[in-house]
Length: 137
Image (cartoon, rainbow, N blue to C red; front, top):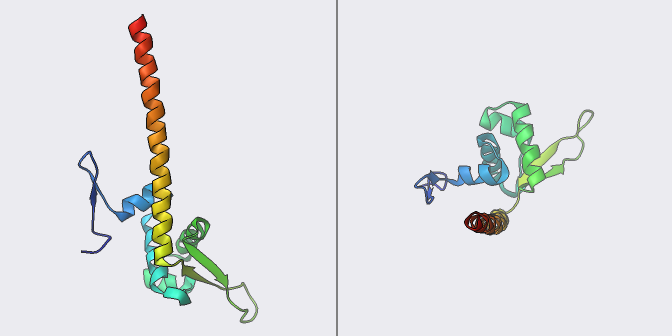
């Protein structure tokens, strides 16, 4: 079974997968995730927007938006290619190492979880105070 098919069961019974986690934590779309996956498959050599357009059969604009988001997140590195004449500069996109990506996502989820725990603690204190006020009346 592919990692993209595996699910994690939440306390509510709802099942979520890696797509759901990446969407929730980073706001990634299906296209963003597919672009990341495709860039990672090219390995250390990376790939260009043109290659991604051909392989994913998506618009250049859509792929460029996804790449920009992934570069901003630090999941992908953009490297300028040496000039090959006149015109716009060309870039190659390389995904960070898989282990580094996994560690980054795990760290972010742990920080998010701790922030959520802190917020829940504050919420519980607020409810306790409100309950105390109500019983005093």
